Image (spheres, rainbow, N blue to C red):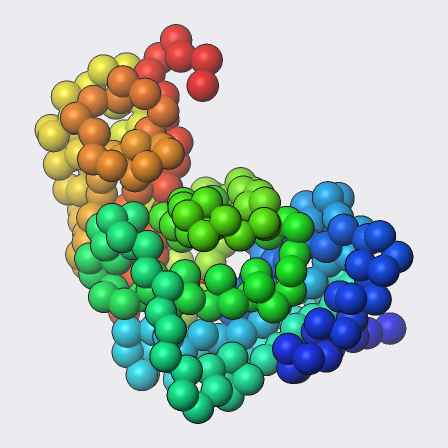
Length: 287
Ligand code: PAF
């Protein structure tokens, strides 16, 4: 058994048109491959929602800031395809860079504000690359539903904003972050951690959870965030790029937990950049 693979927009459109003729609904799970349980949870959710599920696998050069990072990104198509078989995904779409960005390609999708802060401030151009490729994947697949993990919360909100602004008829579905038993959020980058770093890594999630609880109980914002950054560094992280409280829906800065919020972090552990986030709401809120 194997998952059918298509590599061109034309082949993809032919398959989807056949599904549409039989009245099937279609979901897409965009990925860059190196599939782990977090990705597979998105595929399972998509299979619950739609008749036909396309998993896309494209290491998008436009969202990498460094050529070295792009080269080092794992490419594991055969293993990825094998992982999808027992789940029952219907199609794997694996375009190459020439198919996605043919000679003369000149369009960039840019989502202001959401794309410029947090990770966007440290990875210039990253979210333009994400928005551009996701817009293309939505238009190429014509999917009714698209599944994204909350682990990349800023990316999720950016895609939601883009879909709304551009009237793209794809419903974005968010799925919870999948974690190791010790709390570390699953990420393709975790394999880069040395055993010593792997032992330290879950501290990021525990600092977030403790900080979110303190803030929800009314803890002073600036002091509580400063202590969280200090605790992350004390645990062995080399640098905290940001550890911030933002509005859940708009990712705007907040001065207190007076509405549903996200606590978001990006930090370097050795040479590996990890991100994570947790939700927090005012105590007593029903949200
Ligand atoms: O989250 C990812 O893996 C990528 O940013 C995405 C959404 C597949 C776009 O390349």
